[in-house]
Structure formats: C-alpha cells, structure tokens
Image (cartoon, rainbow, N blue to C red):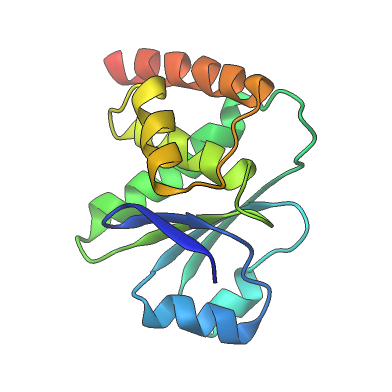
Length: 152
C-alpha cells in the first residue's frame, strides 16, 4: 500500500479495497480511518479489524468543497488523536492524490497549522499529492471558518 506518514500518528494514502489491506493497516497500528472516497465505503472491512471509520464521501470533481465536508473529517480525526495517545489515523481516497491530501491538510489546520504550512508539509512527505487551486480555496474557506469557531 502507498502510505505516507505526515505526522507520527497521521498518514495519507490510497484506497484500501480489500480485507487483506485493512488487516495490514491494523497491523501497522491504525485505529481510525477517514475515508473520503465516494467509490467505496470501508466500514464493513474495518469492523472485522476493530477499526473506526468515518465515511465522508466526496467526488474528485474539481468543484469547491463545502466547509462541512472538512469539519466532519477534522472533528473525527482530532477526537481520535486526542482520545488516546496510541490512536493513529489513516486518511485516504482512491488514489491518494487529491482528496486525501486535501483532507489531511484540513486536519493539520485543525491542529494549528496554517494552510500554507499544512500544504508544504504534505507536499514534502507525499510526493504524489496535488492541490488544485479550487480545492486550496475550499481549504482556505474552511480554515478561516475553523479559526473563527475555535476563537469563540
């Protein structure tokens, strides 16, 4: 599997698709999965391994993403990371090029990174990550909204 660790307990990659690949993720210590691919819901595969899944599907359609899409993923990932120090989160889409890196960047913003810092870190750790401008603008809107909700 093509997995890129962005932080010690946060990784981004491609689709899981099979029970064997889900078992490998469990063996690697992952406890939570943020599945943003529209193509396949991992929930049943994960249940057999005791992993928790947020299926937050979105299409890789080069259209703006609504802030609530990011909020769902960020809340789930931050809850997992804050609940137990051994929890690890795997964020994926189908190929791990657009949607998963974008969602990973949103999670980093939720952890206090600026949009630029988040994008730079992901680019440095996942060479295949690509951030189309329309997605970056969606991330910026989310980050601004997130900062406002955290300040209040």
